[in-house]
Length: 330
Image (tube, rainbow, N blue to C red; front, side, top):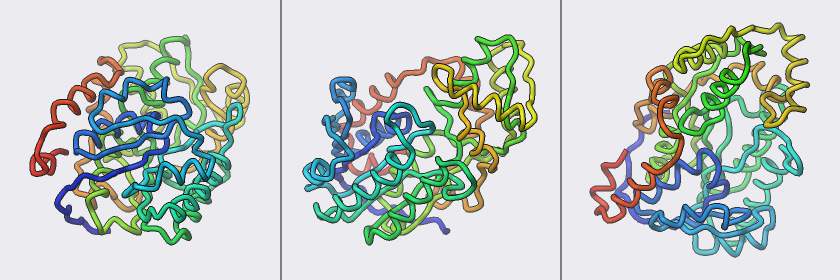
C-alpha cells in the first residue's frame, strides 16, 4: 500500500452508524471541523443532545437493523460510515447481529438508496482465531467486499484515547484492587491513538485511491499486555502487584469476569488475546499520518479530564474556515 494524495476537500453529506460510541464521539467533531454534514443514527437521540452543538451534525433516533429505516436516512448521502461494533455479548447484543446481520442489511439499504460509498470499521486479525468477535468481524468484511460498493475497511489494533476501554479500564481496576491478576499477559498489542484512527477516516474520505483498500491501523510501539498494564500503573502513581496468570487460570478468570458488573474480561476477550494484535501493512503511513506513541500519550490520558469539551469547542471555532484552511487540518 503506497501513500496517496488528497483531493481538494469538499462538503460531504455523511450518514454515521455507531457515531455515539468511543470512536464516533471523537470522529464527529473532526468531521464537523472539516465542514461535512453528518446525520448520526442512534437508538435514542435524546441521550446525545450535546452533539447538536456541533455544526453540521444532526442526531436521529433510528433502528439501524431495519432496512426501510436505513433506506430513508441514506437517500441523499454521499457515503456511510459504519462504526457499529461490540466487544462483548450482553443482553440483546450479539456478535453476529451487530457485525454480520447489520452489515448485510446496510449493504442492501445502500444499494436500494443509491449510496455507493462505504467506510467500514473492523479489527486487526479479523476472521482469524476462535474469538467470535474476530470471526464475525471477518464475516462482515466478506459481506462488504462482495457488496459491489466502493468500500474502504479499517482494521485498528486496540485503540487508546480519552474515555477508552484500555487505559481507563485498567486504571480503574488498579485503583480498586489490591492485586491485579492478568490473563494473557504476554499478548502483543500495537496500541493506536483514537485521534489517528479518526484522521485515517477523514483522510480516506478525501482520497479516491482509498476505494477497495484495507487499512491496518496500529501504533509504533509493540507491547505485551503486562507491559501496558505496568505502564498504566506507574503513570497513575499506584503501587499494585500485577500477577500474570497461566492460561488455565486466565480462562477461569474470564469465566468469572463474565458474571461481574461491566464485564472486565470475557471468555471471548480471552480468545481474542490468543492472537497478537499487530499489523504488517502500515495504513497510517499510507495515508500520510504520523502515529502517536502510547508511552508519550499515557500521562496525559491519566491526568486529564475524559470529556470532549475541547473537541466540541475546536469544532465550533473552525466551522467557519474556508475549504483551503480545512485542507490543512490534521
